[in-house]
Amino acid sequence: MKYNWSIIGHENQLNKLEKDIETGNLAHSYLMAGPNSVGKYTVAKKLAGILQCENNFCHKCPTCIQIRKGSHIDTMEFKDDKKSIGIADVKSIIERLHMTPQAPYKVLLIQSVERMTIEAANSFLKTLEEPPPGTIILLTTNNLRDVLTTIVSRVRTITFGVMSVNYLSAKIRELYPDSDDDQIRKACLFSLGKTGKAVQLIRKPEALSEHIKAYHDIQGFVNHNNTVDRFAYVNEIIEDPKKIELFYNLLSQILRSRMLEEKSYEVQKKYIKTLSKIADAGMLSKGNVNLRLFLENLILSL
Image 1 (spheres, rainbow, N blue to C red):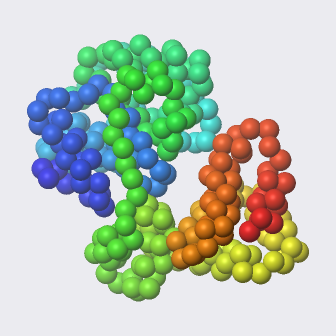
Image 2 (cartoon, rainbow, N blue to C red):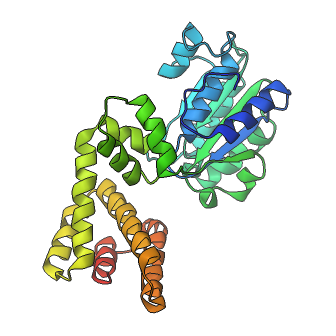
């Protein structure tokens, strides 16, 4: 590739973006969609650097440094702070996009664009479809289904996915040659093929230890029907969204593995039913659902 992206994997997506640049076929708006922690926002930010740096994305000039730090005057970032993006935010964005640029482009990055309220999204549509000259809008989402179709229809979508454990392990080993092979393997397994998550687990051994402990706890629930322990575990994680997400991810991983090994069709159907419940958990959590009751019923059904 022409540019030094410094990104693990996603070669097809990066080649597509480079081709768009080289052929002058850049879209005015891109939506990068895929699971969390696979590198979508990192790609968007590197693309901003490529567009703004006048020295082939050198990583060293003031422009590259400012973009990396999030302080570049013509590169606006709206990172996911778990809050909604409202109409006032969008009006501020539009106003800033119409200011005279000092760099080659005005670049807008919005992480998790599904955070936009319907009112805000509707007020943003005209700008998204016909932004001011020299403007590139880069959006990301963890779930394409949560993004309004009116937004999706006005952007060029690039889809990102997870990677195989073997591929990811080899790449992580290149980046962290001093790390233990078993540690790398476990980090890649628990990351579920997500590059950002794998790197985080390698850099933070305590986080990897937490994943290993949770994995063994959940294995115990699946193997032994101890209601008291199961309810105690729900009590432990109920107030922490990160622990709940970890529980869903690890439980899904364990059940999928067992389903593939299971020969009984009836038992496989039970696994599929439970996996469907877990898949619905994200949607249910956004509604008026008693989360404790849902988790207790889920964990009792194992």
